[in-house]
Amino acid sequence: MATSIRLSRGGSKKRPYYRIVVADSRAPRDGKFIERIGSYNPVLPKGDEKRVVLDVERAKHWVAAGAQPTDRVARFLDAAGVKERIVRNNPNKGVPGQKAKDRAEDRATKLAEAEEARVAAEEAAKAPVEAPAAEEAPAAEAPAEEAAAEQAEG
Image (cartoon, rainbow, N blue to C red):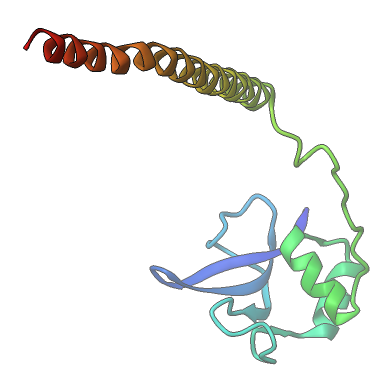
């Protein structure tokens, strides 16, 4: 019989409480188990001594008997010094997928186009400002000339 050391959930909704149990690997998560060897209360603060309660002697017995701990229980057993846990390292886990890369590339392209459009708009705004200023000067002289012509007539 293949046995595993795993967590069996108890507690109410949004208030989890787990029993650390040795169970047949084919049994349901919260179902039939062989022996209860501890408890885990994730609601308590991390430094609390009652957060993880483990019967170390029984845990050693079951590990020696071939029971396979789950990842979370393996952490508890490693902290208790029962069984050393192999540290996993997956450097590709944090790498975004192809669709995310495509979206980021599209976003960068759109930002670059928007920046180019903004620069072009600023340049276009500067160019017309200079041209009308040159045109306004003769227009300002025209009313002065008209006023001089009216004085000469009158």
